[in-house]
Length: 225
Image (cartoon, rainbow, N blue to C red; front, side, top):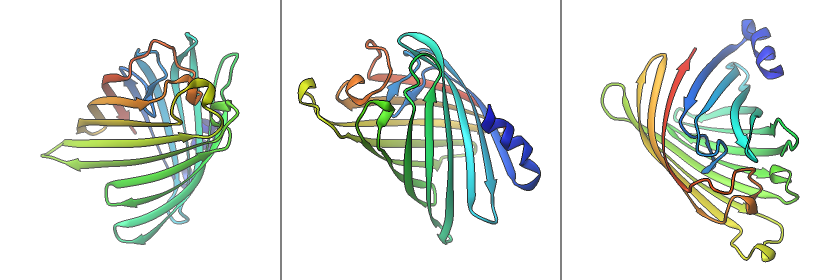
């Protein structure tokens, strides 16, 4: 809420955008944080075009252990154009959850954007407050098909630190998401398929229910302003 209020106060001096989304299953880096159930999300972005600085926040309903809760994510960063189609960025993010366990953690990131292709690398010294560091790399792309239709894809790779010997599993995990979208401004609709490969959720600190599926079809509807 503090992030949202700050954005509205400063909108006279910068560009402020937002969106409200309903999604059939909230997948965070391939793992369902809504227990394979629908989720509602609210996002705000604050941008200072002349300086390159930006900030924002996301609020999402989640289902943990298996009670209803909310994920609160805030971020701030700096982006700069290198060439007409190439830019770089760096920033920080902070994520927490309401409830008796906050699972709060901070991470830094760097990224490159070439046209619609976006790549980022994140580093968290205490991932999901689980006591070990983690490195996450992702690549996102989208392409227009015809008229308002487009396709998109995401590939992510997570490596956790610490000892995994007691769990007898790999410290690596990857996730994939691909789909098709329909952009009818100010609304956007998507249908996608998501899957995750590697160790289970708890090895990586995710506060997800034990019975969530690895594969899912996801439908989302967003309204932007």
